[in-house]
Length: 151
Image (cartoon, rainbow, N blue to C red; front, side, top):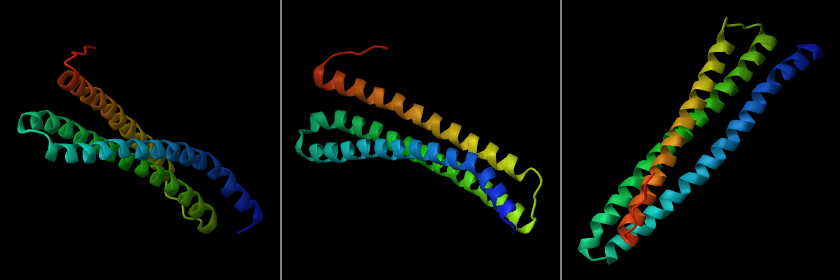
């Protein structure tokens, strides 16, 4: 492989690397966000053992909402990681094309489309988690403070 070909490979790989960096930051935020409901479920589980049986229903409801949030965030993390994987495959396809002359027609376009679809799914699950977080807050405020939230 000539230095010119290597330079071409590196130039073609810059944009996907930027995408990996951006989605990586989203992934970092998602994993940090996932830790919050996990910690809260642990706290509520410990509290569940101490409270009278009349209050267990409220805690059970909150734990169920938090578990759904964890599930949504896990899916969001999964699709963000798949998005990064697809972009890494694009870089590999560029390298294989220039280094070995292996060209699969439309492979880069398909991988880029898959990456964007995975990113959109990840963000969709993230928005669903935000919705569930507000539902959890509404339950907690209603049950513990007897304040009804609307909106």
